Image 1 (spheres, each protein chain N blue to C red):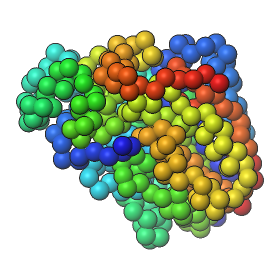
Image 2 (image 1 turned 120 degrees about the vertical axis):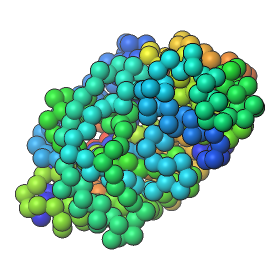
Image 3 (image 1 turned 60 degrees about the vertical axis):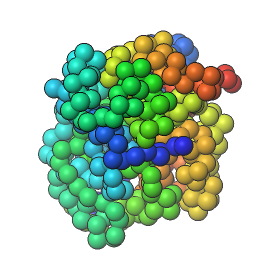
Image 4 (image 1 turned 90 degrees about the horizontal axis):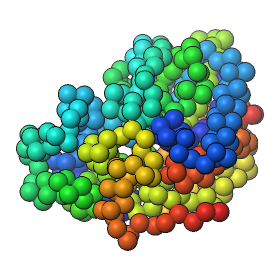
Length: 104
Length: 281
């Protein structure tokens, strides 16, 4: 559901703070286990992050707006078009839930 | 009393600077031409300061119980924040603030009972970085950023957004220095869903309907029909950024808007357009 989330969920605090601190997001993918540990993520959250399962993260209470940012933290932000690794990871997580665009 | 010399609203989709080359050539041409026209319209009014209203992408406002608005009071701003530079393909810019203008607007908002605070450490992402590139390419016009909570429910209602615009307009006229030329612009939207199944599509019918609705110049009708629910149907977690457009509409006094451009871009994952209010009451 649009805009619903758990503001106390550790993953939300992680995403909020990591984006604001170059020391935290630089090399995030390589340091992800350490960062998850420092934010005391639950095992369910950690498993979802490891799989880049943004649907699972959303179901756990991550804010929808943060979900694409998860893919960018892990796969990088540059050239974030539909063919980017970040966008493809998002598509993979949502699977057949993805609504295809219909050209006008 | 200061003068509101320009009111406009436009999208701030990150792909406009971040990956525009991935869009079809025809879309790219229309988007660039549209933003350049918005910039020309703005600069022709020779503003002394820009007051911007845009969604905070949960980058600054607290996750729990955020204010509806947060006025940026810094004397200088740097953008975009480091994390967003590669995403937006922008190396960085500096733009002056106007702490005196910001403090006046913040005080007026608080006196009017708006759920508003102020701070000097706001980080910028696409909300300002995309439009500023076109509105003030040399970054010479100072900016007072007003971050708005559009995506962390409960968000301001359309009516509350209109009221905020009216408070801003009155404060500009009553509290700011005589002769100061103030341009107000909103950024955000149009339809997009950054975080749901409709991430790779948009709702062009909604976007064109919304822009046409603004052309009618009927504040009450906009509030009745462009509800938060309807915006979320068009794209959750993103389309409600159009609440900032409603603030701008109210700053203009509810006069009819003029649609300057619109492109529904699949590759940029957003409806991208801009409107201007030629008549300001």
